[in-house]
Image 1 (cartoon, rainbow, N blue to C red):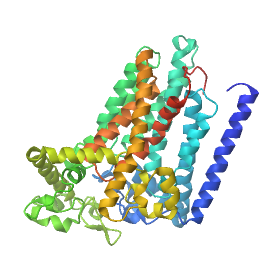
Image 2 (cartoon, rainbow, N blue to C red; image 1 turned 180 degrees about the vertical axis):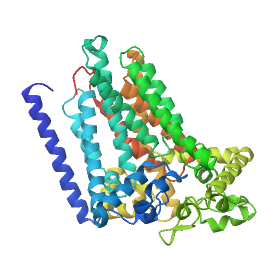
Image 3 (cartoon, rainbow, N blue to C red; image 1 turned 135 degrees about the vertical axis):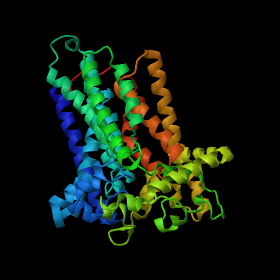
Image 4 (cartoon, rainbow, N blue to C red; image 1 turned 45 degrees about the vertical axis):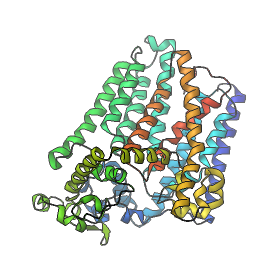
Length: 482
């Protein structure tokens, strides 16, 4: 991208993306899709608003149910923006979506040697009904995508530098190398501190793969230092939870999440068993099962978040301390049921794996908004559930709607893995993408059930990078600069 013609073309493409983003979001507003600010009060993942505004650090420290970063973001905006917080949140979420589109376009420009594919693939993402809806939800979906794309961007830089002659000698500036390392490692750390899906095990897997891929480059020792620092900080937060709550993880909900998959479509009338209660129910329903006096043990530390059963006056407080024992009971019941009925769990995992490829607008909290652009969603996402009536029809529509996306994923994976096998090489970026998609698919299918399509959409921009490469008529290693 050095000639005047290429620079002019690049400016036109960026302008096209900006205009498309602006016009589509204006039209979306006319359809009645705006920021859903009530999520701040309702969503289980968020601390009480009073805590966010006035006791933020204490609330974060004693939050056993979620990693701290997104609640920190919410609290800082509430503190600084005051009554203007809804406008600020809306502006930031739209800005994140635009940044994601520009990052995706940049990655495609430097990995796909084709004039038209980068802009076309980016427009497909930019105009996605799911992106439009998720950027109007006060949640971390698009923020996760941004962190993944930033890591990808700096992996491209790191891989490119390792191919240049200066990378093997003193010519490559040390500052640029450290900039690449920070650009790769910092988003990985922030991912682990934002969403429990990006577990310490994921960080270990990704770190090991990247270190192996770059083991013969001068970036290796710096990357090893950066990833080690990320591991220490992430493990430090896990250790904090273990020291206070006896839970070595970023979230204490794994047992309840697991139970939703294990006991899906399993109906029991034995009231002596905890699985007869829907996971994540009000704590009062679990009183017969709770034997630990956790409230007494933790009283006085952070009573608003750990002791009160409701937050914001009337909504379920799933950070209440008794959910630690409840989650452990669900985990024990789930393991026992899998031993007794492994085929039922396997069937549910298969269903969850199919749900992973369903239209992202099938995510329960996005369905009311998707109904406002029903026919556009039907056309774009092949979301046949928009036409379904009744539960049985919806299940069939979900299965059929997931098939095209599944086939596209499999086709792209086959093309790129076959190319990598023939070339005996895969870029650091593609290794990162394959590892992340594989990890999220596996974990979400085994542990989650009803939200798999949103988990996929968080990583979908990474898949679009692979899609662009698969669509290109020919490929070559990137040798330019960014």
